[in-house]
Structures are given as structure tokens and as C-alpha cells.
Image 1: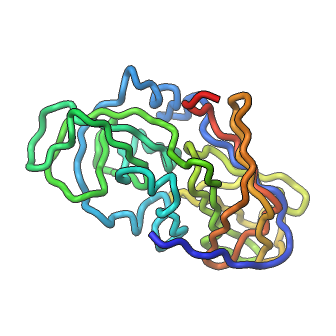
Image 2 (image 1 turned 45 degrees about the horizontal axis):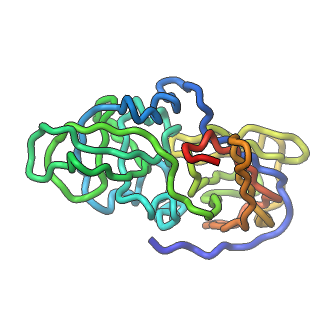
Length: 263
């Protein structure tokens, strides 16, 4: 998927802090449960055909952030829509999973029962039962499957932010290419730290509660991912993405949840 070059702007907004999933439960979402490869989640796998991400709930398609070509997604074999219960109102956006068929089902294109496949959650499946996935590729049938969550394969790449809507009074931003799902974003606006609100389509919004600010906004000079696991710290240059304008972030700090890889 083609990526857009960043647009520019001027004037600072402040710091944006991102927190990725912690090893605790949030409603139906439990990172400790989902990452337990010894006890995978079980359900049914269906297909919704290739190209279904254009309006994906997580806002990474070409109509929004246009970031499906970044490593977290591009390095997965397929993208998937997750059942509503496990999707947890967008908390599962960006989660990478290994899935495999367990035998049984109806149709003409069963999923492999011998090879695990890496997928990334970019959409929701309202009609799917808990544990079930809808695969964004051509296929037919309903097949028994199981899955567990893993780190996304982002390599040494950085996370990317995209301001997809905005004015001097509000903005909505999409964060892409994280190693693991994000649970919160806070912004320093006019000297005060404020939690941004996740919309139903995985956009992080500010709605003028601290007053207006200059817009367009300046792009950040760097982005930092910070892991909880001792010894894992990565500083890398930011890849800015924008539709209306680049954000005025001085920096972005992401706290990534416990990686499954060893430090």
C-alpha cells in the first residue's frame, strides 16, 4: 500500500504520550490471556475477501491514515477482523496473532491445520462469536481455529502518527505501526496534560477542552518507543503521515507493554 510523504506545518502542541497494552485486563481484553500460547483462544474462521481494509474500523486504510504498508501490517500474512467481544471497542486494534485451523468446518478453502499464520487485527467483525476471526483474503467456508497474540514484526521501524482531521479547535490522530495495541494517548496542550479520547474507529481525539491552538501544527523532531522490559529502549526518527497537516508534537513517547521477545 503506498505511503504518503509527510506534510509540514508550524507551531508546537507539546508532547504526546502513548501507552501500549499493559499485562492486565480491560473489560473483555486481557493481554496475559491473549498471549498465552499454551491456551489459545478458540472460535471459527471465515473470510471477507481481499481489499476489505479500505473502511477498516482501525482507520489504517487509504481513506484515513493510509498506513497498511508499514511493517506491522505488511509483515503479516493477512489482516483480520476480530469478533466484537475480543475487539473490545478498538483496544485490540493493531494486535498481531498467530492462528491455525484445528480441523472441522464446511466450505472449499479450509485454513491450514499444520502451519501457523501471522495476522494483524485491523477491523471488527460484529457478527462473529467470541474467539472468532474474519480473514481479509479470498476464501470460502467456516472453519474451526485457534489463535494467540504475539508482538508485531516491526523490526527497527518507528511508530507513525497521522492527523486525519483537524482545525485550531480539534484534531483526530491515528497511531500506526506499534509493536502491540495502544491503550491510551495523552497530549500536552497549552501547558496541561490531557488524555485523548479513543473514537469508535480508533482515532485519538482532542475537542478544545484546553482552548484553541495554532494549526497547522509542527511535525515532531523525534519519536521514542519505550519498553517496560529492562534493557529495551529504542530511539528512532519519526515517520510523519498527514492528510490535513502534520501534528505539532515535539515528541511522541510510547510505553510498549511487555514484549514477548527476550531483551
